[in-house]
Length: 556
Image (cartoon, rainbow, N blue to C red):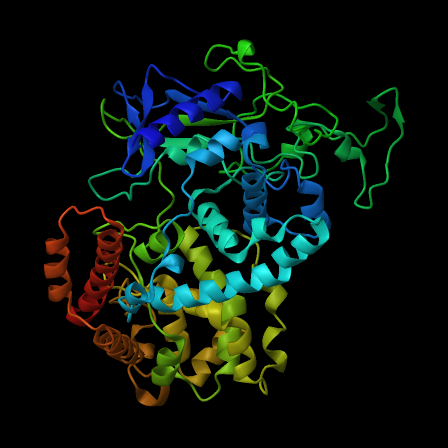
C-alpha cells in the first residue's frame, strides 16, 4: 500500500513537470485496489474542463527514442507501441516516462496469462478459442518483427524477451488510446487512470470524454499548415521555398483543407497551430520541462497541441469519475482489459459458421459467400448507420457475379471465414444481430431470389427492410407472401428461426455447467479480491451472460 502511494506521489510530480494538468479543486487521484482511480471532490457539471494533456507527453512510436528504427523496420500500430514500451522500461530512470512507467503494473492479468486450470473453465465460451488464437498471433508477431528489431537494433535480447513482450502487449491492449493521425495508438498518462464503467438503462457509462484534433499532419504531427503540404510523396519539394516562406499556390490553408468535410468524431475545436517545421525527437538529457514554468490550469501556449478531458455527464461529489472504453461484450472486456461487467447489455454470443452452413447451406455456396462479404455486409452497415446516400453504392460491384458460377467455396471460406464469423452474433436480448439476420436469410432463400439480389443489390436492401428484430418477415410486409414459398416451397422464416434455435441449443449444451450452478458458485465468492477468486468471478460472469442469451433464444 505504501509503495503504491509513493508511486502515485511520484506520478503526480511527473505530471507537474510535464505540464499534464488536472483541476485539483474538482478531482483527486486515489488508490483503487491494486491500481488507481479518479474521484470527484465536488459535484461535477457538464462541460467543466478537468484535464489537459500535451501531446508531447504521450508515448508513441513517433516520439520514443527508437522511432527511427521502428520506422525503418515498418513496425507500427499497437505492435510498435509494445516495442516502445519495452524499450522505455529497459531505459529505467533515464527514460523521460520513468515515473509514469513505474506507476503501471508489470502486466495486465489478461486470460493469455492465466493458468491452464482457469483456461479450462472457459470451455464452451467464445473466449476459449480466442485466447489460443491470440497467443498464436502474438508469437507470430514476436518472431516476425520483435526478433528482427533485436537483431537490427543491437539492444540486449533479454530486455525484449517474449515474456516481456506479452507483458507490454497486455498494457497496450488495456490502456492505449488513438490520439491522432501522427501519433496513432499511444500510452496517455493520466487518461488511463479513469476506469471503465459499462452503461446501462439506469446508469451512464462515462462521466468524461477526451477530445483532441485527430486530423493533424501524418508526417510531422503539426496541427495546421506545415512544410509537408509542399512535399510530394517521394520527399521532393513541389514548390520553391524562399527565406523560410512557401511560395506559389500549393499552400493549403486549414480552411481549404476542411472545406466540404463532414463533421464527426475526428473534428474538434482547434487549439492553435504548430510550428511549420517537423518536431525533433526528444533529447533524453533535456526533455523534462522546468517545473518553475508552471502556469495556471488551462493556460497553454496557443502553439501547444493538447488532449482535453471534459465532463459530459454529471458526477456527484465523492464518487469515482468514469470513462468508457466502448460498448463491448464481456468477451472483449476480459480479453483486452482484464475485467467483466455483470449484466452487460452489450454481451453477445457467436454462432459457429460451420454450424450455420450445415443447416442453411444452399446448392451453390461460393457465390453467396462472395455476395455477403463484398456487397451484403455494406448494405447492412448502411442500414445500421441509417445513412441514405443518393449515389449508387453498388456500381463498383456490377460485374462481381459474372465469373462466380464456377467459384470454389473453400476459397471464400479461407479468405473471409474470420470476418464472416465476427458478424454471426446473437445480442444480449437473444435476437440475431443485423448481420446474422442478413447472412442467414441470404443462405436460405431460393436460387431465383438470390439471382435477383445479384442482378439488383437494392432488392436485397429492400428484403432486409422487411425483417423484424427476430429475423422474421414483418406482418403486412411487401414480401411476406412471396417469402412463404422460399426454396422448394419451404417457409424461409421458419427455416432460419429453427436453425438458430438448434445451434443455440448445441452451444448451450457445450458448457460444462448450467447457469444455475454458475450463479450459486458466484455467490460463494463474495467480495474476495485474491487473484484466483477474481479470475473465477470473471469466468462465471462471462459464462452466465452467454448462457442467458442462448436461453432467451430458446425461449422465443
